[in-house]
Amino acid sequence: MSTQDAAHIDTAQPNTARVDIVRRNNIRSYWRAAITLLIAALLYEAVARSGYFPPVLLPTLPKIGLALWGSLADGSMPRHVVYTLYRVMFGFGLAIVVGIPLGILMARFRHVENFFLPLVSAMMPIPSFALVPLFMLWFGIGNTTTVLIVFYAATFPIVFNTWSGVRSVNPLWLRAAGAMGADENSLFWKVIIPGASPFIITGMRQAFLRAWIAVVGAEMIAASDWGLGWVIFDAKEFLNADLMLASLAVIGFIGFVFERLVFGSLERATVLRWGMMRAAKG
Image (cartoon, rainbow, N blue to C red):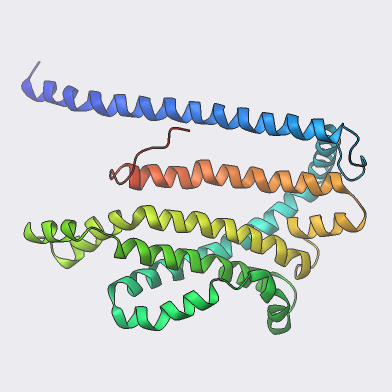
């Protein structure tokens, strides 16, 4: 065996071991999540069967499952999910396109920061739900109002975290890279963005959470006939608590999938790969 082959094996073995460790950690993480959700479900079922609440207000898990199955079988739940996901992803995507560049510009240029930071600080605490009636007057009822409410809710966490992340990049990294001959473009893509990536991904996680809060609230008022928020609001009018809880379970499932598969994969492909943080144990 040649020296090059031996060197290749030596370098490949640590990578293989690292992949195996990550895979085992992921499997353990899913098992722990499953156990946690199972315990929560058992506690809920115990409370539902205790008789403390009327069954019509706190249905058991089998009744919620039947309501979910019925809405899936007649095709209504998938259609509601599609409408809500469209609104969430459209508004969330717009927030990413606007928020990340704006946060970077605020951190890199003082005059941009001086202009936008007071606006972000003043508008970020305003609940998106409070703007739904105003947006309805401006844009009417339907997708436009709901998407804009999601965009409003999701933009500020991304802007603020991106701004904080770029400003927190260690100056020693910049000086060291500059001393090694890195130009401005290399500093930005190979030092600033990796250094700020934990903050940016955290901002995206917070924005996605706020996007769901915003879309459900907006759909309760501004959506016409379709969307998970509309389902919850309409079911409340007829005391269909089983359908309400089934819709909440669908929202929780979607959030869980996005957190584990989308944001988790993005984190592994960026901040963990670049060594900016350690992998979570749970």
